[in-house]
Picture (cartoon, rainbow, N blue to C red):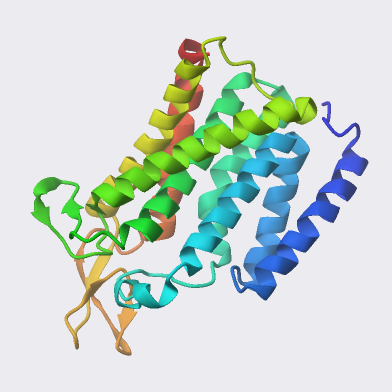
Length: 282
């Protein structure tokens, strides 16, 4: 096993040195809970050991997502009632969004196979796109459409609802991730990366489509399987199991299939697709 930093020990030291201030920043800005910071530290450390460009993409996801979550926070309060979790991200959210990426980074570290690079790009593109779509899509002037029936409108924040603004945000996020990859790989040759075909447009198209497809899978899972509830008191429909101090009523989906499971499932699906079809794409 070879490390791009030279040795395992040096990689641990350098990775810890770079990740520590980011963890402190996340704590001070109340982006992550304490336990989530610990989990995120180990996730980012593994990713850093695999490839520098992987680590940059992970940080790009974290910073952009955290910034968008806090952006116009007061205007999101009404919609936030529908979401299971808001504000600080907990350890389960970190695992849900980072497990597939960590898995791909670990496999690439051990095998040095290009297919796991494509898998990493796909999952980071998906989780970034999903976050951007959620945080930006709530500001759409029109109500979102139900992904299972695009003629039907649903209220903002509804699981399975998609808007034109949110869809554009998801696509832009995929483009952002891949553009960042190419920029870092261009300027930092030791980042240890895959050799894409000479026709870079083909590669860009592949990753953007896979990442964007992952966001759509996330919406489909949210509409079909994710547990969705109704408050007994105020009748608001929400992802929360408790609202207005009382347990909510399950109106669709599975109780155990929450938003974290949705995010984990969609990222694992795109990883599977990217790895399986990589021989035909690279």
